[in-house]
Image (cartoon, rainbow, N blue to C red; front, side):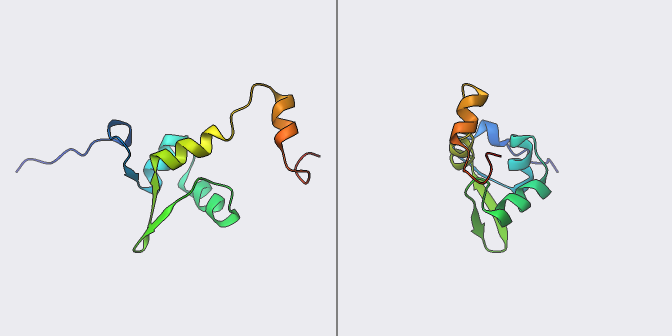
Length: 84
């Protein structure tokens, strides 16, 4: 019996990624994604039944919102309570 190989998230147009796939895509741990969800600071996610899924477009949009040309630009964009 042949096994079916599933494509990676990078090979699909806009797949729903598992927590593990999203963590690998971001080079972070699943635990970090869980903490980000709890704290409301990570990428948007979907709850499908009892599982968490991420749209690659949402993860990419979240990453794009953290793109800076310099540290000065990053510091200027930081909320007042994080600037210190």
